[in-house]
Amino acid sequence: FPPVASSATIAVSSIVFSWSANGNPPSTAYVGWISSDNVTFNETGRAAGTSVAISALLSNTTYYFRAQAVNNGNVATDLAVFAPAATLAAPPASAQPTAVTTGSVTANWLANGNGPGTLFEARISTDNFASLDASSPTLNTFVDFRGLLAGTTYFFQVRALGRNGDVTAFTALPLTMTLPDQAAGATGFAGAAQSEGSVLWSWMDNANNETG
Image 1 (cartoon, rainbow, N blue to C red):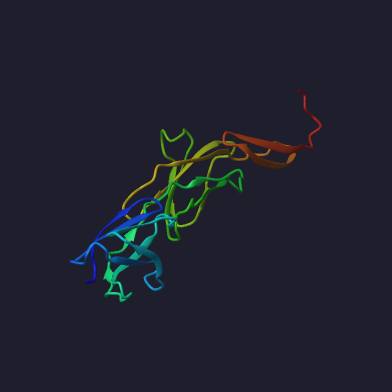
Image 2: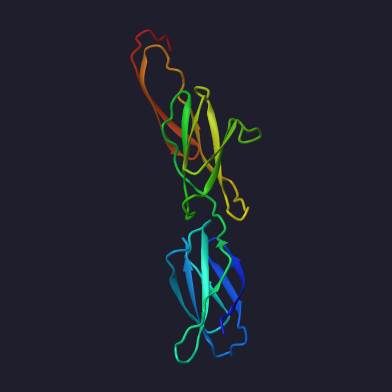
């Protein structure tokens, strides 16, 4: 008899699909099939029991699963179709900022195993999130924050929003100082992040009237 779909236990990168035997003897083997697009299905192998654990899946991705019983003659039953199940979202991974100017910073992060279409929320603050300056939802792994103050240190954080309504913890991104307004006679300002808490500034001093 075809098995009866029962449940799906989800984690960040794995799902356990369970079914009932529907009157089949304990010696019955079952074959599972899984897909991320509900079109192309890959066999998960034969299971001797009434569940199968599938690992190494993309995080925050919807999967489609089917199972069927196979008798001793290798004759398979009709498929039991499970409800779609999505893995949990994984916290994004930190990356260095880019395109630092006097009034803008591009905050970057890594998807960290989250599948295509994952929604991220990036935030920016000048006081380590005692207050919030701006928040930006995006399907990208970067946000270009503009309209910032020159010569000001900004804090950044990002989280992933899961398909099951789950929300990851915030990942802290490297704090970054916008470029200062250029002093008279100075050219070629450039900033390079050295670590999570430091920026190395360089410039060419063309002035010849310093007194100190």
